[in-house]
Length: 286
Image (tube, rainbow, N blue to C red; front, top):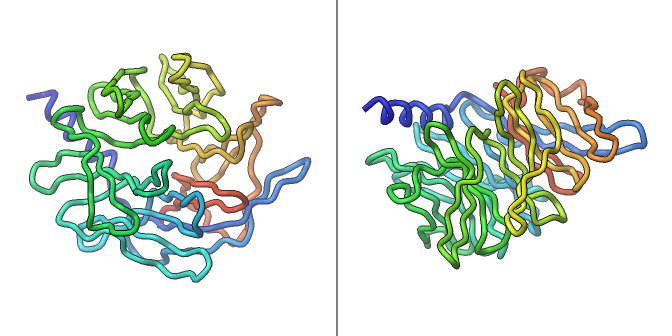
């Protein structure tokens, strides 16, 4: 009974819906600094707007939005500035992610009936068509996901502790990689490795996992005062949000450096980030 209560608490904590906004900004780099500019609040309403994810080929940003206690997946068109609701179900959808074949949006579906958190994919051309990827009754409750290819992925599985799983849909392989991980999972650009954050003793480390070689490599130490949210600018630069600031880590120089933020950006807590080319979407508390 105690374990069940812990799982319910962790599940509610993962998807705690404080008021948040999503801002879109430009990224520019010089030999000295990385600078963000031209902030635009693309959600601009009261309530929960979170978990941005760029479509790799289309001018679309997917995100989670709450209305009347219900979360659904929405898209924002970067060219037209128009938002569009993608899902409209009795359950709640979170963490939209475009699959590597670009045919689907995979997301976490939190069931209204029993609180299960399944991994499901929606057909982009017709979001009413869905396919189950993982049922939480079998795999455990899924919190987050990142894909290597249409058949291989890693997931954040709730539990005591939370664990990083590597799964292969072709072979049905499901391996626990490490325990005590954070909520930021990413495929590293131009690599076949994933980044994740793990607590080891009192430290939080940003690490990489290569499923083909079955190796784990340390990248950098994450700030203990952050919530350990990351995003990759390139294969050699990773961002981390820290309260109201963003820092970048250069894997070549092995140095953290503050990213220059525009004065027009609200000085409020920054959490999740997504990057595509010279654009970044950041989540800021209301």
